[in-house]
Structures are given as structure tokens and as C-alpha cells.
Length: 73
Image 1 (cartoon, rainbow, N blue to C red):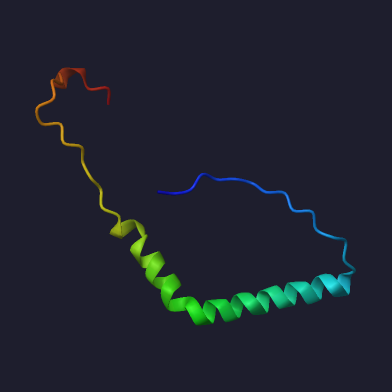
Image 2: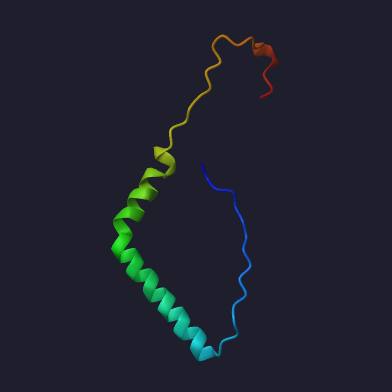
């Protein structure tokens, strides 16, 4: 089950150019470290949730009173 999308407003402080670049570099470095440490977990999750691994379940219509001539599609 996928959670409902939401938006959150975050008010960021004004930064000088040098500070903005320093924070950006820090976040990028952290993300690279995170990815290096957890890349197996991330790859496994992506593989498990890739389109070719999703099972398509057809509804069981046996026993239902359905007029096959009245199919909408």
C-alpha cells in the first residue's frame, strides 16, 4: 500500500551563496555515503518493486451473474 501524497512547506532561512554551496555539498556528501552504505538494500527494494516482478491478479468472476454481452470494454 502506497501512502497518500502530501506536501509540506518548509521555510528555509536566507543563506549567502557560500553557505548555500556548503550546505549543498554537505547534503550531497551525506547522500553519497548513505547510498554507499545502503546500496544493496536500495537495489533489492527496487528489484522487488520493479514492474516485471509485480504479480497481476485477475479477479475471480466464477459464480457471478455477469452478462458477457454487457461488458463495458
